[in-house]
Image 1 (cartoon, one colour):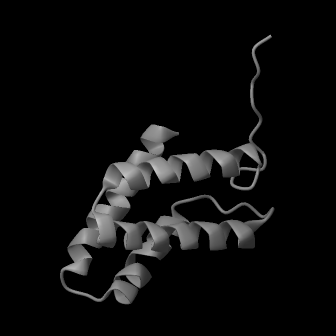
Image 2: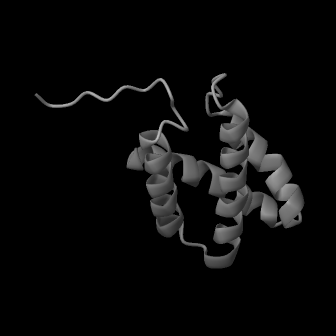
Length: 101
């Protein structure tokens, strides 16, 4: 999941970095965050909660990047929060874990 988080953040933040050179933060977030949100599967169970959480993270991620320009910290936060949301079946409710026997 850490590699996935890094790829997602590098994509989101590189686009955001380019757009922030020309547009305001709200407009940049409006252009970038929907692409980030709809790249995640929105299953029917808890879809609104997932939509809001992913949208919120997209905006927070861009804001953090505009403030600190540190992809590693943002990726780490993404990975920790994402892992917790997956563990509690908020992001991927149908995911089943294989346990060692």
